[in-house]
Structures are given as C-alpha cells and as structure tokens.
Length: 259
Ligand SMILES: NC(=O)c1ccc[n+]([C@@H]2O[C@H](COP(=O)([O-])OP(=O)(O)OC[C@H]3O[C@@H](n4cnc5c(N)ncnc54)[C@H](OP(=O)(O)O)[C@@H]3O)[C@@H](O)[C@H]2O)c1
Image (cartoon, rainbow, N blue to C red; front, side):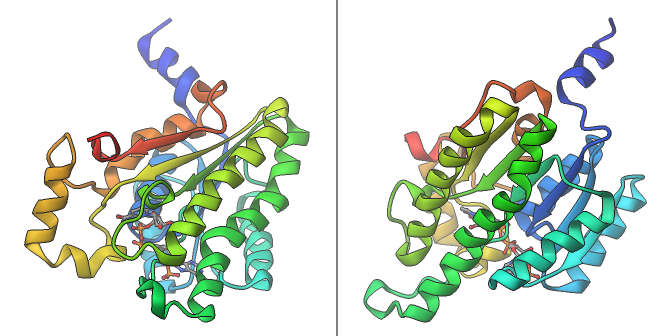
C-alpha cells in the first residue's frame, strides 16, 4: 500500500456531500474549502450572494464541486428552505458543518429580547433544525458527520459573552445529545472550539493592535487563530478517520483555553 492510498483511506472525502453553513466567510469558508479539496461536493449556505458566488467560483476554479444557497438562517422557515435547496444541489449530505454564527455583544444589562432571540435562532436553533432534517437520514444510511463551531465562550465569559456564550454552551450540549442519539448508527457529532480568530466576525477587536497582541500572548503558540487553522481538524472530523470520536469538543485555539 502506498502512503497516498493509506492517507486517502483515512481522510479522503471523495463521493461525500457536505453542507457548510456560514461557508462564505471566515472559518466556514476555510472549512468548506478544506472539505471540497479533500474530495467532497460542498454546498455553502449564507445570506450574501456576492460572498457565496466568490467562494464557489474559487472552489470550482480549483477543480472542486461546489454550489451555494442564499438563505437567512435566523428564521425556521429560512432554515427549512435552505435545507431543501441544499439537497437539490448534490443530494442528501453526509457531512453537516454549522459555522454560521453571530455575536452582537451588547452589555448584559442592555441585552434585549430581540438580540437574545436572533442569537439563539442563528447560533443554536438553525443547527438543531438542520440536525433534525439531516441526522436521522444519515443514521439510516449508516454514516454521517455533524460538526458545530462553538466558542471558548461556551466555557468562559469573554468580552460581553451575553447571549452568545449561552448559545454556544447550548450548542456543545446539542452536539452531545446528537452524538448520543446517532453515534450507534455511524453518525458522529462533535464541535470545533475556536479561541480568537481573525475573521470578519471580529472586525472591531481585530482593529485594535493592543488587544490583538494581548490576546495572542494568552495563547501558547503565540499568535491568534486564522481561518485556515480549522482546515485539518475539519477534514479529520468529517472523515472515516474520526469514526470513534464523538460528542467531543476539540479546541483549535493555540492553547488559549489551557494557558
Ligand atoms: N472569529 C472568532 O474569533 C470566533 C471565535 C469563536 C467562535 N467563532 C464561531 O465561528 C463561526 C464562524 O465565525 P467567523 O469568525 O468565521 O465569522 P464570519 O466570518 O462573520 O462568518 C459568519 C458566516 O455566517 C453567515 N451568517 C451569519 N448570519 C447568518 C444568517 N442569519 N443566515 C445565514 N448565514 C448567516 C455569514 O454570511 P452572511 O452574513 O452573508 O449571511 C458568514 O458566512 C461562528 O459560529 C462563530 O460564532 C468565531
């Protein structure tokens, strides 16, 4: 056996279909690119069409199979419509990545019900509804991978965690519930836990060089995260290689959480 065929037996996603929410920006875009380059046909889901088409053009330009769906995941009807449109592209997904997320950061005493509701809808309810739509079918077929992107704020308060931290803590619990339900049928459910990653989500913090340096100093690696840092972990969790890893939170944070 050559090392190429050994590695492809472990990690190749050839023939798999992946749906990546938030796949047009930041961490989701890097993960969509990684899964596509590892062989999966990838559907990216988000609202803004320009970012979606740019992502798909980059991937198809690299010889990958990719499609996009524009949808607002803050409403239940939006999520349901997105799921059906995503299936229309390449069929039922084997891999679901929930990376779409928002962090609105009002101080706790000013946190209103509108921010609470929208945060829970996008960060928690959309992953739940997509899991209900795709998880049982993955279980019927005997293979599936569900990957949620949570946050260090699932574990600790950080810069106005407010509703955001609550939604991410619940998302980790959702992953464990899904793992409990579907792992016996070959469907693993895990979370990737970022620390501080330089993406459009963090434009305000990223623009402050002192904050950026202070956060980098809190990691062990000595720098803040980049979206590309999630590529390898996502391919691992999406692949056959991770068949015995389920219900877990994998911190991709340069050691921030243990420093
Ligand atoms: N960056 C960090 O430091 C960090 C740290 C911890 C956790 N995370 C988590 O990592 C994930 C990705 O974050 P990121 O940093 O990559 O952020 P990002 O670059 O802002 O990307 C967020 C993505 O979600 C999509 N999205 C947002 N609201 C949506 C909605 N209502 N309907 C459909 N799509 C929506 C956005 O596209 P549209 O705006 O076009 O809809 C975009 O594709 C999030 O879940 C975030 O909470 C990030």
